[in-house]
Length: 227
Image 1 (cartoon, rainbow, N blue to C red):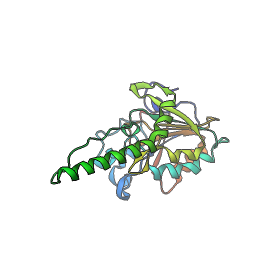
Image 2 (cartoon, one colour):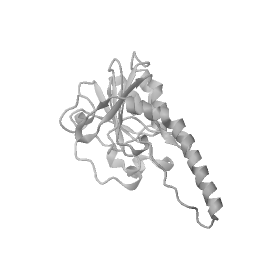
Image 3 (cartoon, one colour):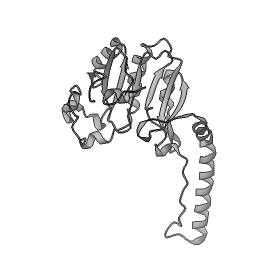
Image 4 (cartoon, one colour):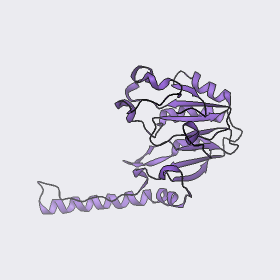
């Protein structure tokens, strides 16, 4: 599925065009102002380490970028209702975790006991509500990939990408998948867990639309480029 180095190590070869889509930085910051060198084609090794605003977006496109991509990708496939996704198994939020109970300081033993009981009750409610999600994750097939990056595989319509995530504070904290492609394989989106950008391979018209979008920061690359 992948080549030996550079762009082709992350996204499959054989597409008409490729683009490197840089993840949105926080507080409305733009790569052009914060780290413009990453907007160059990847013919030379990329500058490393990444500057501080960039490190915060490694491995995850974020909801805003995903939502901006959905209509562009949907228009570039005949199968928007049949897509495949791959999500790295190593994200900690994908695992059900236990809670450490401690006696609240400054409270009477009776009050502390009531508090611990309430915490346990809430934890039981949380676990029941999250059980279907973790049952789904456990049922997903796993695809080994290079560097120990095992991927959970699952299917759905293209807009199902907006529902991927893990429970947090009663809601779903969204996370973009590492792999994302339609049944007709007309494009492929790849977000390597250590990169603050995402590669898209597909028709030239699709890459044109991504590079031209005013809300996105993207650069054309070749499958043979270093990054």
